[in-house]
Image (cartoon, rainbow, N blue to C red; front, side, top):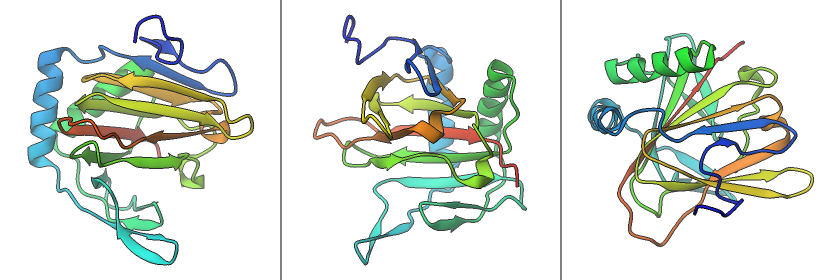
Length: 201
């Protein structure tokens, strides 16, 4: 939405209390196409359950945690056994490391199969991510709207994440902001999202 301040085309999305920088054309169209195809085929997709209001419900997406064997990760209240790095994921990780200047030793890969798949408000502020973590988030496939909401003021900032884009959240972003991928009733194609992080303890 050119000209709408709620949907910046690129650059820094947050005016204060953290950083979220969007690089819309991080991968070329052909590179993004290849990464999407390879990750879709080679990721060991899982669907976990969540406890909501005393009931177990299935997560509205598929996911997989990739890291070294000793780096288990608890996500959405569920312990995740790490899968080994594969070729497409390693290539994407190296590109993110080169761009950010940070090393990443874990990756959560999510598959949003349709507009009905979503991620609720949350922060990647688990102690294992460290203080002011750098989170590199790559989007492949269908465009989805990404929302950030300030924890104190409730200000909301939104941006559309294009195919092949990179969003780098850093500084106090996880301390001060929640983020989400909301459901949509639009008919859209699948989307793969990879969030790289460095587990410190």
